[in-house]
Every structure is written in structure tokens, then in C-alpha cells.
Image (cartoon, rainbow, N blue to C red; front, side):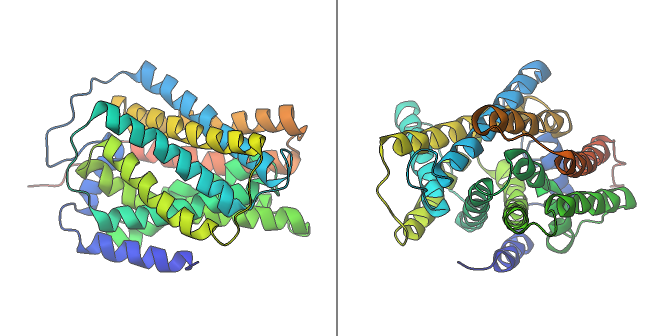
Length: 335
């Protein structure tokens, strides 16, 4: 597997060669969910439905991590390799989106293959690392560390998009990474290793966020989801060929559940972003931390400890600062 740094450089080259969006326009797209060059999609704002969809997406996303933990720890039979769990996620999610495409027959535009391949590679790597981490650490810890994604995306926007970062956002980045370091629990080998896996996942998914910012303005949400899962499945199929083992019936059901839950989470979140600003939607997605802790307690009898609360609080505070700063009105540049 190629290093995440190689993928970040690759994404940076893609974004620098793209003349369709400036850094300011990408920020507009990320905040308002529409292409600044074209008329917005025919979607009426509905904050209540957006909040409900985001809560549902949070519950579904936490459910995928729960099933991944069950598969990776041997709770449903012989433990499956994270590459195989990741393959199941992309396989069944693609089947769902492909079936929907066959029935709905939506119109597709020409995909930006370079961005899609970069985004899917980062997404596959992040998902695989997160599933691996779930087998070693509490789900609440893995989920908390995953909230570093926007912080990593913010840092990557400096060299790749030419964005300038103010003191508040720098402070939030430092606080978030400090929280992640708390969750690594130095001195406890297994837990530290699992937290580092989750940290690697956050870095990969933060890079993916840069690609999503551009793709969301150029292509329709359904096309993005379908192409992403198709490319992700291709990558996952190649990777799983080296570690494949035949799952039992319960494991097949869990793999299908991961794909279905992930497809549902993606669909809910994309549509939530179309119904309300990102600054409104984002805080609701942090409830996935509560869902993850609840699932872990009910199924595996794992309860968060004081270290988990401290680390999670630091990361959530940093994320809240980012949301607050993004929600503030910014002066428009002079013509």
C-alpha cells in the first residue's frame, strides 16, 4: 500500500491543476453546498429535516464501526482481516447504489476521474484503517479521533488550496491533535496501536475531504456516491485477494449490514447538506460519538473511562471552534 503522504501529494497536484475553482470558491462550496459558478440545485432549505437526516447518518455510521469490531474481534466467527471487512463495505454499498441507478436511471455527467480516484483511494485507506482500529480500542475513542478529519482537511488546504489559516483555527488544530494524543494512552501497547490506526484513518479521510469539496460542486451527489463506491470496490477487491477467507453466514450478514448502513449514512448526510448549511449540519454529526459509546456498552460491555472523556472533549471542543469560525460571515472581496 502506498503511503498516505503520496496520496496527499497526488491530491495536491490535482487541485493545483484545477482552474474551475479558486480557494475562496471552494470555501463557499464547503460552507453553502453549491457550485458558485452555476445556479443552485432545486432544493428548499429545511433545517429540521437536515438535522434528522444527520442524526440518522450518525447512528448508521456508528453502526458500521460496531459491525466492523464484531467481525475483527471474532465475535461472529474467526476474525476477518480489516481488508476483507473494508471489501464487504464497498461491495454491498456498490450493489445498493448500482441497483438504485438501474431503477431510477438518473442522468450522469462526465466524471472527473482524477479527483474520483484520489478521493476513493483516500477513502478506502481511511475506512480500512478505521475498521482495523475498532478491533483494538473502544468505539468511542475511534470515533472521537475520526473527528480530526476536518482539522486535517484544514491543514491540507494551506499547501494545496492556498488558504490562509487564522489563530483561532490554528488553536483548534493544536487542541484537536492534543486530544488525539491523550487517546493514544502512551504506555499501553494495544490501545496505543489502535489509536494510531485511527489517527492514520483521520489523516486519510481528511485528505478525502479536499476532493469532496471539489466534486460536490461539479457533479450530482448520487453520481459521486456511485462512482466512489465503484472505484473503492475495485481497489478493495485487489487488496482482499491476498487475505481472503470464506465468511460464515453471520459474517456475510454483518458485511452486508456494513454496506447497507454506510450507503444509508452517505445518502442521509449528502441530502442533509443540500437542505442546510454545513455550519448547521456539522454539529449534529458529532452525536455519532454518543451512538458509538452506546453500541459499545450494549454489545461489548465497554464503557468510556476518564481518559476517553478528556480526549473526546478536547477534540469536540476543537471541532466546535472550527464550526463556529466557518459559520461567521466573511467580508466579500472588492470587485
